[in-house]
Length: 219
Image 1 (tube, rainbow, N blue to C red):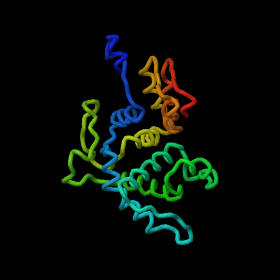
Image 2 (image 1 turned 90 degrees about the vertical axis):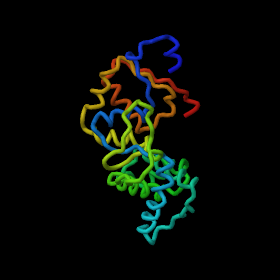
Image 3 (image 1 turned 120 degrees about the horizontal axis):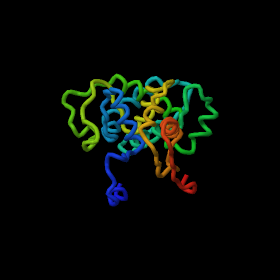
Image 4 (image 1 turned 60 degrees about the vertical axis):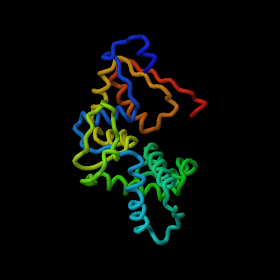
C-alpha cells in the first residue's frame, strides 16, 4: 500500500484487501447479516462449551485424547478448524485420505477437529448476540465496512471465504465480481489455501489479467 501511495496513484483506481477481508466485503454486498467476532472472543467464550458438546456425544468405541481446555488449547483448536476447513475436505472424503492430508498439520486428533468444526458451524448459524455483549467482542473494520452487530449468526474472519463460496455455489457471482478488475495481483501466493484458491480462481474468470507472486521454497 505504501508503494502505491508513494507514487500518488488515484485511490479510486485500485483496492487492497486481504483474501478474507475481500470475502467479508462481498458477503456484506450480498446482504449478509452475520456478526464478525474476534478470534479471542470465540476461543474464550464459545469454544469450551462446543468441545463439551462434542465429547458428550462421542462414540464410546472410539478412543481419543481429550485436551485440557486452556486459552492456548482453544486457540490451537481454532487453528486446527481453520486448517481442516481450508483443505476443502468434505463429509464424503474417506478417513484414510483425511489422515494423509491433515495428520501432520494438526495439534489434535483430526476426528475430534472434524466433529468440533461441524458443531462450530451448526452453532454459529443460530447464534444470537448477548444483549450485554461488549463492542470489544467484535472486529473493527476501521471504516472499510460499516460496523454492526448482525441479527443472527457469527463468523471469524477466517470463515469468510468458506461462507461466501457456500452462498454463491453453482452461480457465476464470483466471475461477475471479477469483471470489476482489469488486473488482480496476489502477493504471498504460496500461503494460499485450496479454499482460497477456489475463491481467487472464480474471480480470475472475470478479470482481464491476473498476477500471482509467491515463493515455492516457503510453501
